[in-house]
Amino acid sequence: PIALGSDWSSISTTISPVLEAYNMGQISASSTSIKLSQTYKYPNFYRTIPSDSLQAEGIILLCNEFRWDNIAVVYVDDEYGDWLNRRIQELAESNNRTLGPIDVESIAVSEDIEYSQAYEEAANQILDLEVYIIVLILHDA
Image (cartoon, rainbow, N blue to C red):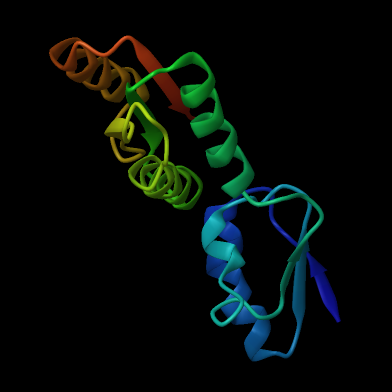
């Protein structure tokens, strides 16, 4: 049996092991976290949409195309944002271009505090960094 999965990666990563215990699979049309690509950990998880790895590659390609060498990534601190940010960091560090690697400053927006306060804190951190290219990895609450 297969259960229709959650819209959220954070929920899919939580319920997938439970479903696996009952020998059930999970299929999702919108859980995109790179973490769910770990087939050794989520062997019964399937999706109908690519993982966020492609988004990370696209962001690095944009940096290369426009010769951006310093960016900030503001991301929601959950399975979706955290793993996408990690992949952007990995690709930026291993980027082979004549300009050298891309410097990525990461700022997590916590779900545990009120969003307006979290965004204000992130904005203040961006001002301190003096970064002009900002990638936002956020979603609805």
